[in-house]
Image (cartoon, rainbow, N blue to C red):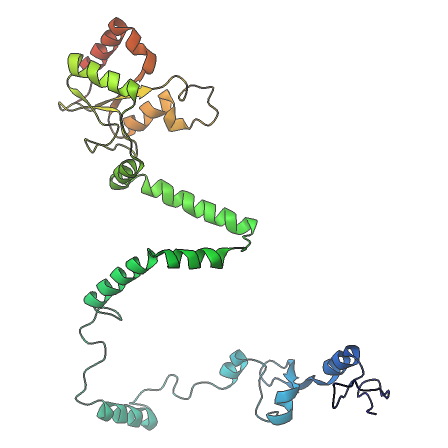
Length: 296
């Protein structure tokens, strides 16, 4: 019967085991902690006593001198650091040998932009776009992210980054028009009634709410735009969505906020509420006064 290396007790082997050194896992782990790692080296650079693995200490103890690569680099400087071919014969000889070995050969990146040529970059871009659209790729990404936990700090950083990107994108007129097109924005019933009204009474104002005229001002798409040279826009506000009772209403969605945003880019704005069309005389008077004082 064998003797345990840790507790020195004689133990009985299992029928399935041919040999053994420890009577239990507790003794095995205790022995490993004592003898597997040995702090028997002192770094000559920083003076720190560092732990050496038992397997390395047994075979390569003489070769290991420093506690880390950083200490090794600091203690053993690069032999040619600060030397030139004018001051050192070894540097000059190495340069001549390299020059002879490459004589008559073109550089591997000759005629290329960066690492790859423009043609290669185009091929890589097209290939990656096509690959990313495949359902297999999307499924693979979804499975890899499944169960992944995101910390509150990471969520906050991602949110701030996305917020900055969204603000920047919505200042780009092309991005705004693309979003309107993708969302399938169309004139609602109220806007259709005002389209008919303006065609009959104020033909200078044309509908632009779906981006058909391509007019984007301060990141906003005005409902109606003066196409006769004046810097005037008209916005149609719904009583429910744009009222002060709506707690989710943003500043640029209020009457004062919308007028201020357009004023920043030099345009006059008139806000008309959707129910004002039921009083055509007052609406006509309001539009006439706005049309007269409009800026060119």
